[in-house]
Length: 187
Picture 1 (cartoon, rainbow, N blue to C red):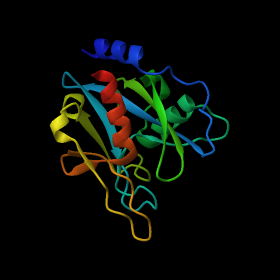
Picture 2: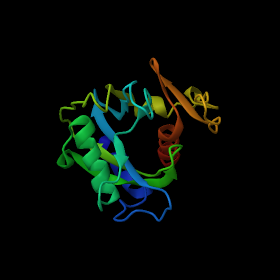
Picture 3: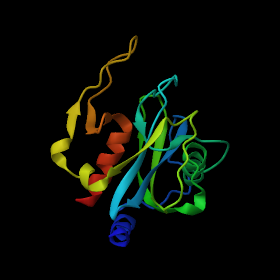
């Protein structure tokens, strides 16, 4: 049940941060949206357009770099509005995961929130499509693998990361690490 999961997450997640964790890196925030669909909890992901210069075609959470002096929650909510058309009042923040550095040199805060049933409209400049993956599928340990992603031309090989196939897509890298952090809290 959604209410039971939300209560568990509120208990186990870190509080929603009011300020950014100190870091020498530029700051960014993402939102891990949990939404109820067909009687099950799903995690919403976005597929980045293949024409982007960074993170092209990757599966990610809605999110991006800090704008001005906004805090982590404001940043994540703004990015959700910009990328998938979801207003801030349709998201109930539940807490956060510890920040992690990204391969692109950012310190990323991951907030977790309950997304109310509202229309999701992807901005095609930033999102190719939206994916909903059942939380029960993500909790299936047999579907996860630890692998080293293929290096990009002219770049060093990235470190190993969790990989999760979802349909014809592959969840990996920082987003997969955040999902694994979330799943660890649900054990």
